[in-house]
Amino acid sequence: MKFAFSTNAFRNFSFSSAARMISDAGYSGIEIMCDTPHAFPDQLSGIDIENIKEVLKRNNLEISNLNAFMMCAVKDFHHPSWIEKDEAFRQIRIRYTKDCIDLAARLGAKTISTEPGGPLDGMPPNCAIQMFAEGLEQVLPHAREKGIEVLIEPEPDLLIQTSTEYLDFLEEFNHPNLGLNFDIGHFFCVGEDPVETIIKLKDHTKHYHLEDIPKNREHRHIMPGEGGIDIPGVVDRIEKTGYKGFITVELYPYLDEPGKAAADARAYIKRTCGYDR
Image 1 (cartoon, rainbow, N blue to C red):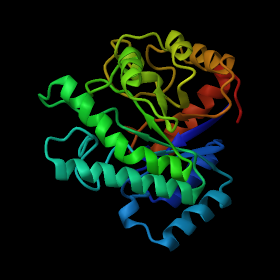
Image 2 (image 1 turned 30 degrees about the vertical axis):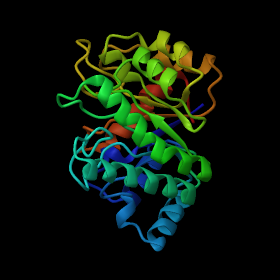
Image 3 (image 1 turned 120 degrees about the vertical axis):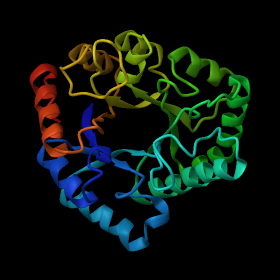
């Protein structure tokens, strides 16, 4: 089990600067944000992709995951989503996800994470579930061809929020290249015990996001150790499942001093969980 840090905290910095600070903070992995200014596929040339590979090599970093969730290059964190009422707008999400799959294959990444359907915005849940499945049906054959897994990331106030909703969706729609990006804080926000939920979803989880959340369960990513989540207990439970991949620390609100946030989080994990990788 290894630790990575997400570049979505470094939106005011270049990818090269983000990678250097993440490496300096002691991480062995990096989650790359597939959005501006780091790796929005529409804006990447072949030379840009080779430069990303060189930066990773220079900083001794492995890719933990490609974060294909937010699309601020087009609109915002949650739009365009998989369940837009405007089909043309919805197709932007579908094409983007296919492009992220291609990018993952070129970079040697194994997974991309995506939103769990998006905001309902008044849409009936059954219609939204059907639309989400139809969108995934257009993407997953391409993922299988490229050898990439697409990971759904449940989130508060979006279509799929809870572990039960995720499992219910899989009963109706499943695919060998579809998995789970388990965001520890998100499940805590919706009232679940992350330690218990890790066991419940261990057979589906291909990557973890880690952050703390305030004790009142407000959806706000804060520094590990400053909220209501038992971080050492979470890490211990993940280890006991036999998981060998990356846990990516995701602290995207820390835009002013992301390098310090990365280093402080790493120091906390090392001090309380005993992990130095």
